[in-house]
Image 1 (cartoon, one colour):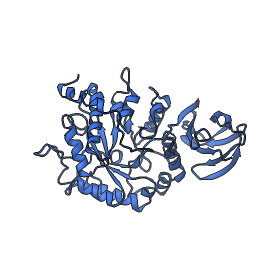
Image 2 (cartoon, rainbow, N blue to C red):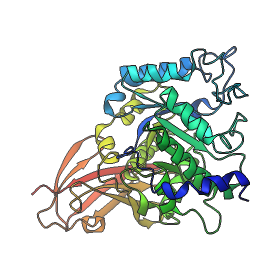
Image 3 (cartoon, rainbow, N blue to C red):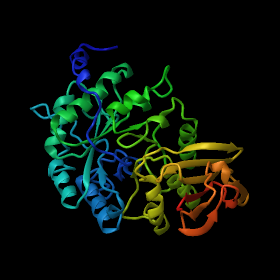
Length: 407
């Protein structure tokens, strides 16, 4: 039901032809607290892991000192539960004074001093999912507050509101963010709340107003969760891959590499598929305590190259044969280079042998392609359109290749 407040917003919508903030020309990269640290506000009993300014400062330090930032991981994103339970006397949001004693502007300044960016969380509804003050009826004031604090990204969730209101509210927040004059990357949870509705999300409309958007359920720290998200993206209901590109990207949710739920092969699957899907790469892990092999995956420059290809084309599943899937992503130069992933979703036994005809990938240049195995960086030689590549893929594993045409 459209409430009276939205009737005023309707008058603004003709002015919002697109978000047009010049941001997210490639998928944004960084770190986000939610999956690993959730809504842990107990800084008395668990000061090391609670949602506090110390946590975000420490993660920022590791992004810079451990080499993530120079590879593109620039955003440090606060999620839910950062606020006081009440707005201030002036109606503005305020950080919890015990856990964020210096306030959010201090954190933004800290990030900027390190060459990083600060992201923040709010909710379009009357409350956040964690029960803190939401932005409904305060969109303009909250946008101004975030800009005054020096925030660089806003993730706007969708709890505690009628989903019918989202088609007005999410564009309205985009309008108010633009109005501040500060470039603030806009992440919308809008389609994630209506993906199973009829007729479903209008992804072109969403792309007009949001830089990135969550399409589906939250990721959990489990292989089943990763597989479910991959299957949702493979099905591409509503053709959301069609609207992905510079400035607009589908977001399958956080990278959980380095946590508890995935084997090493399954971590490789997530990195490979998120790269193929041109997904935002927001790690949600504890950078203070991460396995070396997980760090190597997160920092693999060839995986990041695939993800950050400036064409911004979202890859797709082109073939499914039982538990074997083939995904491809066109890359620069357009029409002549591709990344490709061969995914093995079987859950037992040994590696599976796959004979991959190169013509299956849609690579047809007679001169052939230089092929590299992405995880190791090993150059495999020149393969023509008539070549067959023999690949062994572990259970719950993936092969990731890159074929480039260099005449």
